[in-house]
Length: 300
Image 1 (cartoon, rainbow, N blue to C red):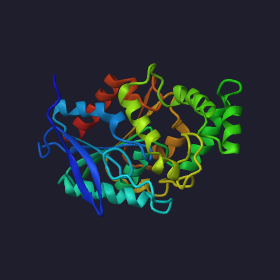
Image 2 (image 1 turned 90 degrees about the horizontal axis):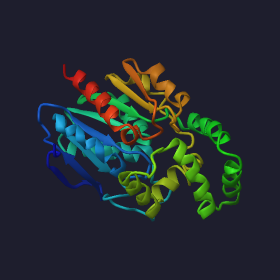
Image 3 (image 1 turned 30 degrees about the vertical axis):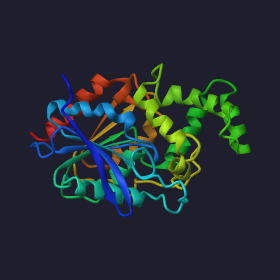
Image 4 (image 1 turned 135 degrees about the horizontal axis):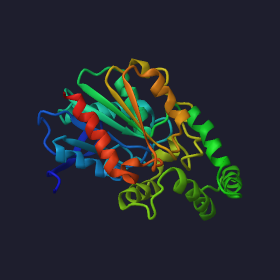
């Protein structure tokens, strides 16, 4: 079945612009599913197959966070500009500009899940539900678990990574090759990597401004401004039914997800046994079923 038609465009965000895509019909009687991508500094592309939810009547909103993709690029801006508050303001602006702020569900993936959790903790009146996919509850937890995963890499890989990290040569081909060993285990286990995932991967490669400022040179070497950021302090305030998703081989290990399970009052956790950080790509049929069932239960 072909997907319902899409509309694309940009909404103003202060002096800048946020690119968006809506698949399906907003105000269809079902809340819009607003997809918040990871990174920070990535793009919506790797999450595009979630638009298939529109086949069951759920309008789906994708957008590119400011700094990459179709939104305004600001390569000249420094670390002080790129803050979680900036992206929370952008999300709130998007919801109101698209006129979905009165009836929506957030689906946040990776960094986007942390952003969505912080947004939800403010108890916005139009939020109906929250899906946190492959997200840690804090970067300090994430970093402690990265050490565990790195120690399990094949002999010599972590030594290569650490040598380049110490020397500041993380842009080298040797670092990239060693980094890919980790990514193929804990980020996306499909071979070859899907086109949608590669599209976002190369968007970050072409403009790493936000990723480098907030995260660092790789998923497991977080030296940017987010290195101490956490949402553990606020997730107990989330008042909507929440679905947690993670992969058995995920870089977002169970220890990083556990605070969501422990602290959110109404929460359910689904682990995808054949997936790492991208179950929507690695197990797409089960992902769609799990998310579809969750959404259906929201409106019963």
